[in-house]
Image 1: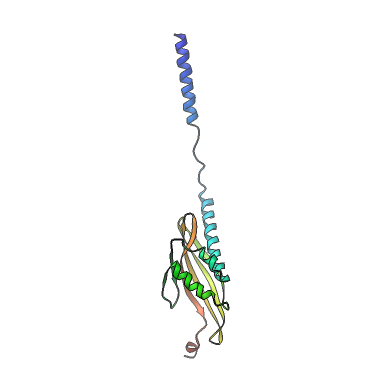
Image 2: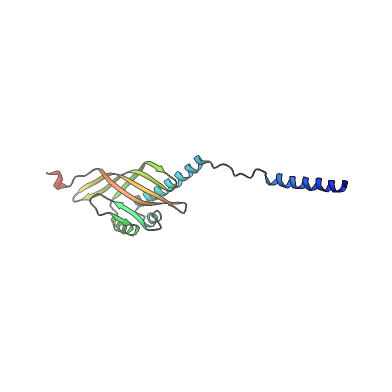
Length: 174
Protein backbone atom coordinates (compact mmCIF):
# COMPACT_ATOMS: atom_id res chain seq x y z
CA UNK A 1 0.00 0.00 0.00
CA UNK A 2 2.79 2.33 0.94
CA UNK A 3 4.49 1.49 -2.33
CA UNK A 4 1.26 2.20 -4.23
CA UNK A 5 0.91 5.61 -2.57
CA UNK A 6 4.51 6.44 -3.41
CA UNK A 7 3.90 5.52 -7.03
CA UNK A 8 0.73 7.63 -7.07
CA UNK A 9 2.59 10.55 -5.46
CA UNK A 10 5.45 10.32 -7.96
CA UNK A 11 3.00 10.00 -10.86
CA UNK A 12 1.03 13.01 -9.63
CA UNK A 13 4.26 14.97 -9.16
CA UNK A 14 5.44 14.09 -12.70
CA UNK A 15 2.06 15.06 -14.17
CA UNK A 16 2.12 18.33 -12.22
CA UNK A 17 5.66 19.04 -13.48
CA UNK A 18 4.62 18.31 -17.08
CA UNK A 19 1.55 20.52 -16.70
CA UNK A 20 3.51 23.39 -15.21
CA UNK A 21 6.23 23.17 -17.83
CA UNK A 22 3.62 23.36 -20.58
CA UNK A 23 2.20 26.47 -18.97
CA UNK A 24 5.42 28.44 -19.16
CA UNK A 25 5.11 31.87 -20.70
CA UNK A 26 5.21 31.24 -24.43
CA UNK A 27 3.42 34.42 -25.35
CA UNK A 28 5.03 36.33 -28.14
CA UNK A 29 6.70 39.61 -27.59
CA UNK A 30 4.18 42.39 -28.03
CA UNK A 31 4.32 43.99 -31.45
CA UNK A 32 5.93 47.40 -31.42
CA UNK A 33 3.34 49.16 -33.59
CA UNK A 34 5.29 52.41 -33.65
CA UNK A 35 8.44 50.68 -34.94
CA UNK A 36 6.39 48.71 -37.50
CA UNK A 37 4.76 51.92 -38.76
CA UNK A 38 8.14 53.67 -38.96
CA UNK A 39 9.53 50.75 -40.99
CA UNK A 40 6.46 50.82 -43.25
CA UNK A 41 6.87 54.58 -43.83
CA UNK A 42 10.58 54.12 -44.51
CA UNK A 43 9.93 51.48 -47.19
CA UNK A 44 7.14 53.63 -48.70
CA UNK A 45 9.41 56.69 -48.83
CA UNK A 46 12.27 54.68 -50.33
CA UNK A 47 10.02 53.50 -53.18
CA UNK A 48 8.72 57.02 -53.78
CA UNK A 49 12.26 58.44 -53.78
CA UNK A 50 13.37 55.75 -56.25
CA UNK A 51 10.45 56.75 -58.49
CA UNK A 52 11.25 60.47 -58.29
CA UNK A 53 14.99 59.98 -58.89
CA UNK A 54 14.17 57.76 -61.88
CA UNK A 55 12.10 60.63 -63.32
CA UNK A 56 14.84 63.18 -62.67
CA UNK A 57 17.46 60.91 -64.30
CA UNK A 58 15.20 59.68 -67.12
CA UNK A 59 15.91 56.10 -66.01
CA UNK A 60 13.14 53.93 -67.43
CA UNK A 61 14.32 50.66 -65.84
CA UNK A 62 14.43 52.19 -62.37
CA UNK A 63 11.04 53.80 -62.95
CA UNK A 64 9.54 50.44 -64.00
CA UNK A 65 10.79 48.86 -60.76
CA UNK A 66 8.48 51.15 -58.79
CA UNK A 67 5.33 50.31 -60.77
CA UNK A 68 2.64 47.80 -59.86
CA UNK A 69 3.54 44.24 -60.90
CA UNK A 70 -0.14 43.57 -61.62
CA UNK A 71 -0.29 46.30 -64.25
CA UNK A 72 -2.55 48.76 -62.42
CA UNK A 73 -1.48 52.36 -62.84
CA UNK A 74 -3.37 55.58 -63.37
CA UNK A 75 -1.70 58.68 -64.76
CA UNK A 76 -3.68 61.93 -64.72
CA UNK A 77 -2.07 64.92 -66.43
CA UNK A 78 -3.58 68.29 -67.33
CA UNK A 79 -4.93 68.45 -70.89
CA UNK A 80 -4.28 64.77 -71.48
CA UNK A 81 -6.27 61.56 -71.73
CA UNK A 82 -6.02 59.48 -68.54
CA UNK A 83 -3.67 56.51 -68.78
CA UNK A 84 -4.95 53.44 -66.91
CA UNK A 85 -2.20 50.83 -67.13
CA UNK A 86 1.48 50.40 -66.38
CA UNK A 87 2.08 49.75 -70.09
CA UNK A 88 0.53 53.11 -71.07
CA UNK A 89 2.49 54.87 -68.34
CA UNK A 90 5.78 53.28 -69.47
CA UNK A 91 5.13 54.04 -73.15
CA UNK A 92 4.52 57.72 -72.39
CA UNK A 93 7.69 57.96 -70.28
CA UNK A 94 9.76 56.06 -72.82
CA UNK A 95 8.85 58.68 -75.43
CA UNK A 96 9.30 61.58 -72.98
CA UNK A 97 12.74 60.39 -71.85
CA UNK A 98 14.03 60.54 -75.44
CA UNK A 99 14.12 64.34 -75.09
CA UNK A 100 17.25 64.97 -73.03
CA UNK A 101 16.87 68.75 -72.78
CA UNK A 102 14.24 68.97 -70.04
CA UNK A 103 14.86 68.78 -66.32
CA UNK A 104 12.63 68.13 -63.36
CA UNK A 105 13.33 68.72 -59.68
CA UNK A 106 11.10 67.13 -57.09
CA UNK A 107 10.67 67.17 -53.35
CA UNK A 108 8.28 65.34 -51.08
CA UNK A 109 5.83 67.70 -49.39
CA UNK A 110 4.00 65.15 -47.24
CA UNK A 111 3.10 61.50 -46.93
CA UNK A 112 0.36 59.48 -45.27
CA UNK A 113 1.02 55.75 -45.03
CA UNK A 114 -1.42 53.04 -44.04
CA UNK A 115 -0.92 49.29 -43.88
CA UNK A 116 -1.69 48.61 -47.57
CA UNK A 117 -2.24 52.03 -49.20
CA UNK A 118 -0.27 55.24 -48.88
CA UNK A 119 -0.27 58.63 -50.52
CA UNK A 120 2.22 61.38 -51.03
CA UNK A 121 2.17 64.91 -52.34
CA UNK A 122 5.26 66.19 -54.06
CA UNK A 123 6.30 69.50 -55.50
CA UNK A 124 7.89 69.46 -58.95
CA UNK A 125 9.58 72.08 -61.10
CA UNK A 126 9.74 71.05 -64.74
CA UNK A 127 11.88 73.09 -67.15
CA UNK A 128 12.66 73.12 -70.85
CA UNK A 129 15.42 75.42 -72.13
CA UNK A 130 13.56 76.10 -75.37
CA UNK A 131 9.89 75.65 -76.09
CA UNK A 132 8.76 77.61 -79.13
CA UNK A 133 11.78 79.89 -78.90
CA UNK A 134 11.63 80.63 -75.15
CA UNK A 135 12.45 78.92 -71.86
CA UNK A 136 9.49 77.07 -70.36
CA UNK A 137 8.64 76.02 -66.82
CA UNK A 138 5.77 74.22 -65.11
CA UNK A 139 5.59 74.35 -61.32
CA UNK A 140 3.37 71.45 -60.23
CA UNK A 141 2.02 69.55 -57.28
CA UNK A 142 1.98 65.84 -57.99
CA UNK A 143 0.15 63.34 -55.83
CA UNK A 144 1.05 59.67 -55.78
CA UNK A 145 -0.83 56.68 -54.44
CA UNK A 146 1.18 53.59 -53.59
CA UNK A 147 -0.07 50.11 -52.80
CA UNK A 148 1.73 47.44 -50.80
CA UNK A 149 1.79 44.14 -52.68
CA UNK A 150 3.66 41.20 -51.14
CA UNK A 151 5.22 43.57 -48.56
CA UNK A 152 6.65 45.90 -51.21
CA UNK A 153 5.35 49.35 -52.15
CA UNK A 154 4.42 50.21 -55.76
CA UNK A 155 3.16 53.39 -57.42
CA UNK A 156 -0.40 52.94 -58.69
CA UNK A 157 -1.45 56.55 -59.31
CA UNK A 158 0.26 59.75 -60.44
CA UNK A 159 -1.84 62.92 -60.62
CA UNK A 160 -0.16 66.18 -61.64
CA UNK A 161 -1.67 69.65 -61.27
CA UNK A 162 -0.03 72.85 -62.45
CA UNK A 163 0.37 75.69 -59.96
CA UNK A 164 2.09 78.11 -62.30
CA UNK A 165 3.64 77.72 -65.72
CA UNK A 166 4.98 79.74 -68.60
CA UNK A 167 2.15 81.18 -70.61
CA UNK A 168 2.09 80.30 -74.27
CA UNK A 169 2.79 83.16 -76.67
CA UNK A 170 -0.84 83.14 -77.83
CA UNK A 171 -2.07 83.46 -74.22
CA UNK A 172 0.55 86.10 -73.32
CA UNK A 173 -0.59 88.48 -76.08
CA UNK A 174 -4.31 88.15 -75.38
